[in-house]
Length: 141
Image (cartoon, one colour):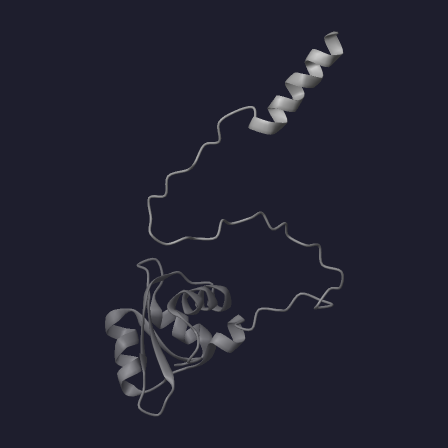
């Protein structure tokens, strides 16, 4: 008898359902497809055999120091060295290249692009370093 009452209860549950279905109220007019989880696939083949080297090394950033009269005046009066640098180099790269090549600390770097297309960098040194001594060591003077 117990099994028949269970069967009858199961039959009514199938017919009418067991609970209430909640309907989510929509707050927006437009329907946006829900985002589903997409796991990151493991690469089957390496696209590069070796990691690429940095293209802007210190020798590409700084091309040569400038030795014009105005550059010499900057060295003597403002404690500033003047370099012609790569057009793609930014101020941080110029500062780091000068630090690595000449073992000096820069206070700040100002840049401009000349009418001939070359980039000029004014490298102001800190009070610890004298631009005249550094210029002698580099071989500008």
